[in-house]
Image (cartoon, rainbow, N blue to C red):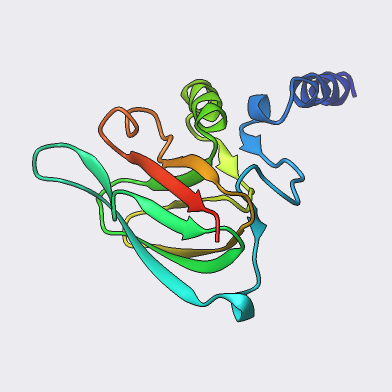
Length: 160
């Protein structure tokens, strides 16, 4: 019984330190800085995005930059053609960099956010997104070391 109480107290303390400290990232977002999850039926465009390593040791997304129109709903199809896990996170630069710091502290953090995904080698995934706010944003892989290896790029949302 004493072990059960200690285990319960340890779990409560871990949960009290916030979502990042527990190794997961599950914030209840309906809308983010650059928009929200979209409906596939409203998508007029599909973008295929590849995640991979290069022969010279860099890690990249292809394409290297993304541009959308305010109000546009798109299907983002991802393929990890690399030999390592990769992720995709899109948000303001400040939010991405703050998330990068949290990922450095918790490299195995799981994501349950609409604006991100993580893929093992050979896996595919999809984000359907409505870009509701114009502005300059960024996308990145925040697995420790990947951002520094070149795995990030600009995302621009233009007014109609």
